[in-house]
Length: 432
Ligand code: GLY
Ligand code: MN
Ligand code: MN
Image (cartoon, rainbow, N blue to C red; front, side, top):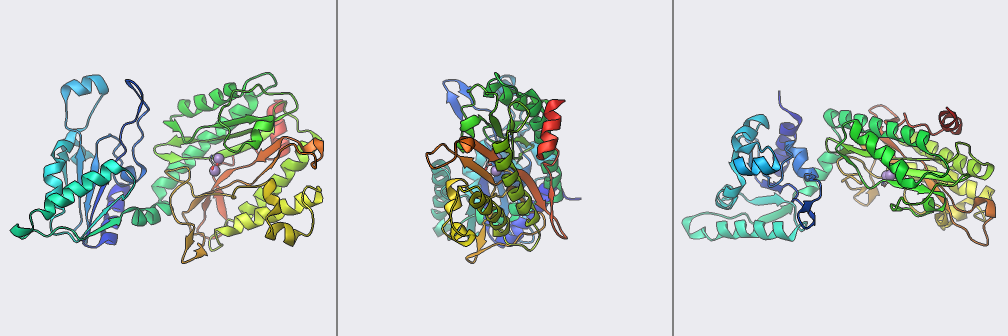
């Protein structure tokens, strides 16, 4: 039986017809002097290979008789003593089911031969100047052999247009990892809720999240955690996480782990002292109603836009009822007056990247939701202090974010539901 990686390479090969794909993994990044950032492979490369080592390139030869070739680091006793294990081409070929594998040092010789007489190269175009230059070098080397009767590819196509569509619909193996990632993150949010207390610092709560992510086997946070007490919650990308938590404030946490290359993305908002105040309750319930309406609208066949429309409708009406927006619902929606308090969209695709790949519109239309798509559902309401806003609502920032898999029949599966979001459940947990 084929592995998911072989299946994906085969699908790419069929899509390319007689082309050839050449896809590098990510480079290692230096943080400063001799210290590196933790290595993270490229999402496209890993989607097709499952291979995690840097300095690797996958080649997929298109058509029905497709072949896959890996270039990777050669075995190297001394480097392995310093930096750790390398599979080397021979072992990688067997273990990762390639038709062939070569040392990366050989790519300048072998790749120009592989692209001979192929009509199109599929590669990431314009992502990295280094890669573009290498690709042009190999192409020109093949072109230089024209008088020997060698034809060089005439076309260069961005391979991401095929891979993005493939990655948009998750296969069962991917859904399984994403459910596990979501569960770890949901549990981390529960830990954060039980750890929060007036007088603690935001970074102490961030530490609880990171500890739990690692303890449960996730490799990284999927993005920098937002741990935002009080008015910091009204800064959408707040990541300083260095402020003391005050009694009577809300705490907004947007944090999710990455597991085996897949992101999770959860936001919960709760009172630092475990009990919502009256005004906090009002805003929280409004966002929760909007979120539940968006969840309801997340269903196979519905437009991508449907959850956003459902959420904004509820939020806009709520803001009118609270005298924070003025005029008719139609006017507040049409003129986007709610955007003073709700300025982002209700979700994004989720997968290997937290803001995952895949077009949101096709042929000028919002695309319709299909089984296997995974997305976030994350309305919010952020009220800054201003003379025309009642003081009781100042500095209240609320977002509630879940991850959803679009089901085959109807509706969606919320894979982050272990993290409580009903007021009574949050207060019960925090009082325990
Ligand atoms: N955590 C990133 C986002 O919610 O989009
Ligand atoms: Mn998100
Ligand atoms: Mn988020």
